[in-house]
Image (cartoon, rainbow, N blue to C red; front, side, top):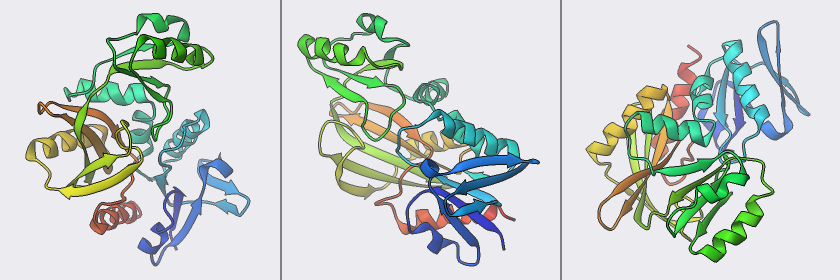
Length: 272
């Protein structure tokens, strides 16, 4: 019986893989070993030698060892969804934004400093958003409205050992996620609790995806060779649209069950 290893992920996934040996492990409590070119994941429950890895790590703070594990999956030749090479491409915010920009997709312009001694050189016209490093889920992000806030924030940032970006605040009217799974695309309009898009979502509504943005998300999907990818689009009252980021491990909450079924079929197809 073929073994599907699910890394983190939602509790419902084993229900989609009847007839397979399904193992679910958390990256936080697991170790990865490659021996004689064979891949193993080991935790307190024992060792697993997967035939395919289903990577659903989600919005947790990334660590260097996570990247090392992806490199070992790639080295072992074990198929992964998304592929390890695709996940490595988008692992860091800067590489993700670089990819969008090279494709000519409308990203938000940003300033960046590799060290906090240069914060004075990346200040923008207020209001602007400050982002520290590669964190997800709304963490490491602050909205700066005035000089006093900026001075206080700089004191806090000084103790960080990571790159810092600043970008103009987009006073958006709509936050729309376009989700592509295989060759199917869905769109969802979301309303968050505060100014941070895609954080603390309190309302959502499925909408008909626009052809222009179907083409854009498929362009990205093809370029990074992803089985699943999402782009988060901010729209202003003036109708301007910007891509905030792309997500190669997007959550599926609120999307039709068809998206989960489609993704599970991709995982199973890697075993054939």
